[in-house]
Image (cartoon, rainbow, N blue to C red; front, side, top):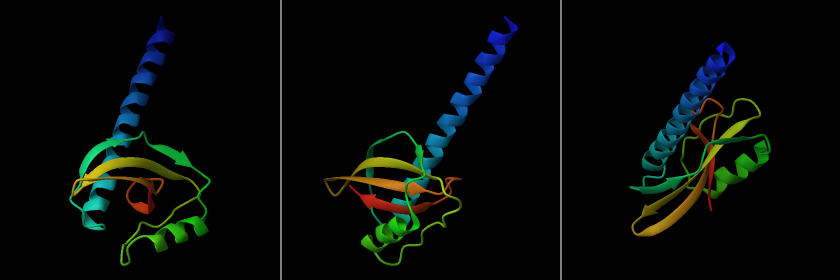
Amino acid sequence: MRINNIIGIGLTLLLFAACGQQQQAKSVVKDFVADCLQQDADYLDFTDVDSTLSVSDSVITALRQQGPKGIQYAERKGKALKYIRANYLVNDDTLSATFYLDAEMTGVVAYKQN
C-alpha cells in the first residue's frame, strides 16, 4: 500500500510540472507574438510542449533570416530545444507557426510559419 501512495504522489507531481511547463510555453509564445511580431492574435489552440535535439544552429539561422528583421531572439543554451505549435487568428486569417524555445522556456530561439 505504501508503494502505491508514493507512486500516486509522484505521478501527481509530474502532472503538475507538465501543466506548468505548458502554461509557461504558451505565455512565452503569446508575449513573443505580441511584442516581436506586433500582432494582436486570438489563439485557437496549442500543441503539447515537446523537446528536440534535431534543430541545428544552421537551421536556427535560416529560420531567423526568413522572419521579420529586428527581432530579439533568445540565445540557444545547450543542444535541446523545446517547441510548441500554435494556431491563431490575425485579422481573420488563420495562421499556424512552430515556436522553438530555449531549454528553460524563457524565450523564443526561432520560429517558422507553417
